[in-house]
Length: 509
Image 1 (cartoon, one colour):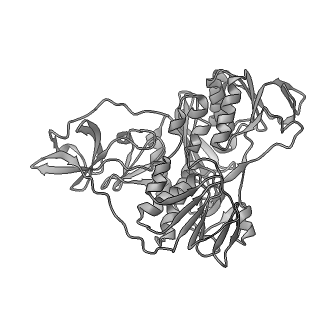
Image 2 (cartoon, helix red, strand yellow):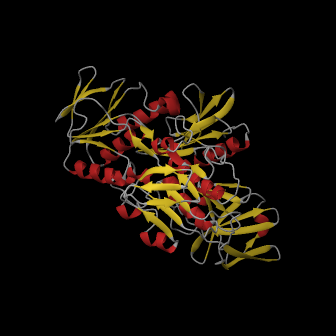
Image 3 (cartoon, helix red, strand yellow):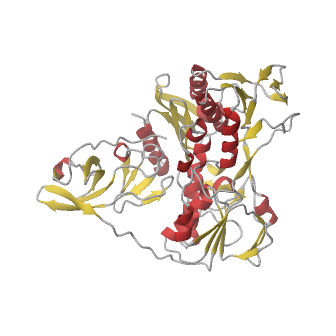
């Protein structure tokens, strides 16, 4: 996790500032009442909101103003400049909104606006049931209440914990840099206050779409007026000899991460099987814990199919500079008590193994209910399935992206935003999900931001200096930009996001 500077910068807006120094379409960092404040101008109108992103504390002043919103440079959260409202994940909490008073050619920030916007849904189902307590499910439950829905909301999660910050499980939490109190997205009392019936350690074993009932693992049945499926994915497990030995771990849940942390305390050598994003983030985290780490990957360039050869090599070089050993173009053949045997006979000594070779979408519940599936649960642009009043979001949803065609994406921010959109559509918003996919990945001092959806066949070109970790890789398909991966160019990645949204050409600075 990063932290924005706590020192106040820029002008004191309580003392006033010349309006003419804030140009139309720009944002200015200052402060008022001992807090950083962002002032933005759109036409003749001025807005003032808190300047620190409520996700990880990113500096909004270094972000991008788009229409009447500002986007955080760190993880692309969006805030409404008129209200301070967090309108797109990963930020879930609003920032403060301030009053502005104009006196001649100067403006003054005079205090906070405490009143929160109220909304009335276009339609309200009798009740809403959400199956899955991860990113999409948790975000959807919150959005239903924010949009003014007052009916019963039930959030059913198979996990033993309430919704938590899953990306951190392979990053700072696993590395020992983030305490566990940072991991829950909300405390238990939040769900009670919002009247969200959050069930943990509970699975749905069946759906009866005709009677609009879900059957729970404890034998109960629960009716629904609208249903959101957000069942996520499960790690792909190895089937080689020794794959079930006790020192073999997978990482998906908070319990998994805790287990790896405990095993790492008594381990000296680790082997990570799979050069995926999860696998490489685990490698980074275990190196932070001073373990010797070897990574086994079937591809010749780690992450090359997603990031391109040049950035994939930069990821490998960054890991190698911090002591990670790679065995690429290799697969494990067998796991033994003290070592992993590879397909070429190489033996890697280890007392901890973490497997990250991909995940499979949990679509069986949808399939049993007669909902259309094809490499995921098929949804329309409103995230509704072929069965009316049943929606799907997150890792299981395969939706028609306006740029890449029908896709399914396993990214945290995508899942949260789909949950938010699905919630609004459950309430009659008729809002198309068109936001380009976005994710971030950390590898020691290398922080990657990726927006869009490329494929292995896309042409990749580099703008900037990858060796200096200040560059963007632009991916093109049929001469159109499909995705942009950036390091050290956070604002540029935001600009790429806007270009993708608007169907415009992206020209990096």
